[in-house]
Image (cartoon, rainbow, N blue to C red; front, side, top):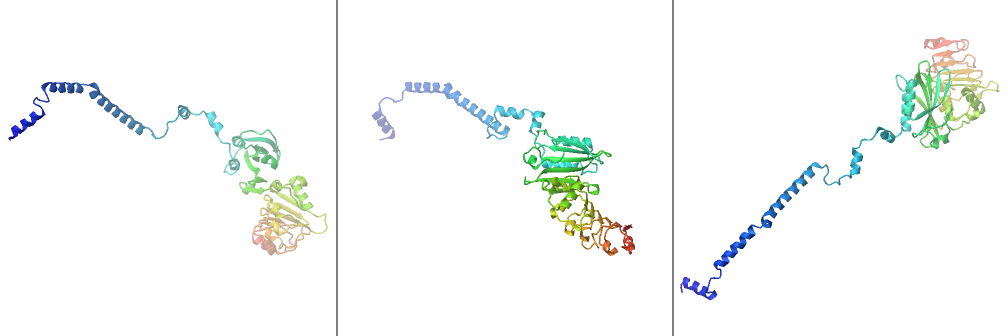
Length: 378
């Protein structure tokens, strides 16, 4: 059977008439044409493409323009506070008050300069440090002005002529008490005394500037409020030199001692000064010492290297061997009315000595002193 006959036999077996008629063809193409012309099939995909493109562009713009795209944006209230400039009054209210260290540094700075502060400058500095003037006294050098400084912005309603008590500092009433000495002739701050609470909070620290060449150097005593305990004659002699009552004498007062006279001529024999070394160590302003029938051990004299002038009266020393090590900074020595019976070699052991008063009959070889540049007087 040929291929043609085989195909005809199969077609006859399936159906003698055609399965896909012309009517079927017409309906198929008509349905396809309607489907192609539908808006949903043609417009929606395009719209979806446009929206996707816009979304990608918007996301990219936000990513590159924001500082941190993953951080939540600030609330409107926060943005308003940040953008709004703060008034000067509010800034001043938020400024921290000066610390104690800053106050001490600035007050010392009035003296630690080639041109010390004058009265007007002193007043401005004190006000800036939240200080208040509480008293003014006058002496031969000029005005002594006392100030108290509050640890906060609250001004103190109090008055002190002397350093306040330890309790006043511990209670927070003040954190600094200062006494500034004005040299009236030159209108400048000449010296300063500072009292404040020690680091342990259990005692007071007192600092005082020197005078003369050591004016810019501050000496310090810790435990300034502690009472002084020593032999009666020594205690009364110190109190008399400071114009204070013996029972009111404190360790801080010893820092003010510039001249000391101990007169034991009413006693039998030589009066030996006895005291704790810490008391003599606190005498950091002592420059002039007069001993009448009294002697201070060399160990105590070594604690006071500031002594420049010494006068011995009556039965005190035969030679200087027992005290020479404690008088190495002495520039002026008066032995004219003393029991000194030494030699020129004894006096030459005092390395800083420039003037000595001694009788030629006591030191006949005084020319040795003159040869070394020491002025010998009698």
